[in-house]
Image (cartoon, rainbow, N blue to C red; front, side):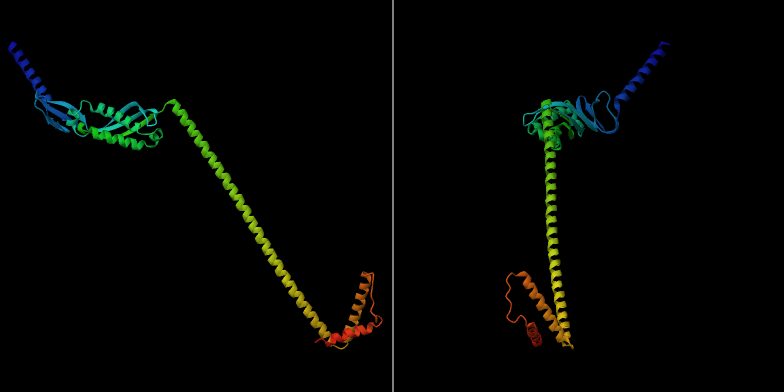
Length: 308
């Protein structure tokens, strides 16, 4: 009975030893991971994803690294700009392990080292930049920090992918000054816009007056042209009518009794004009042969006859 119990205990112990050996020798590496293996305390090899066997009690997994992109929150730090303004900056750092061996033996803690290096690099970059530029040139500042970190972190087996400034905290006095500056800038733009509007309005009004004067002058010019053309046509019509009347008179004179009618008409005009002369003047000089009106009429008639 005692011998059976000892055998059973030995069997159980052997089974446990086998299980321990299997657990020590078999390793399954997950996807996107690397295991660093040490043999008797010295680096031996790096295991990629998959199933692997180790020598029990000789090989051991010293370090485990993920090859995925890691996000590190860079704590707030006080930086002084080139124009001597202190600001607080928070950032986010994105890194990735590309060499598990260097990440294990190149530095003690690459995450902490990358975070500290990001802070010191950021202080150096901000110290060379004015406060106004820190808001306008975030992309450039991020690129400078990434370039500096990537060069320094190459011996550590990590790749710095990008750095982003998450927040810039300003002192209250600077915030008040910037707010006043922004308010003054908005008021200045409003005043400029108002003056530009008034200027444009004045230009529009003057252009309207100018066009109005031009239109009035053009209208006056056209009016004068029309009046001149009307007067010219009137003169032409009067001349034509006078010529036609004279022709009719000449034709009438040639008819029988025409000469007598002309003599009578001349005598009537003579008497009428002589009467008007007597009304207008206080002193009247009478011709010597006033009674001989017939001779005067006859003389005028002779003149008319002589005209072609």
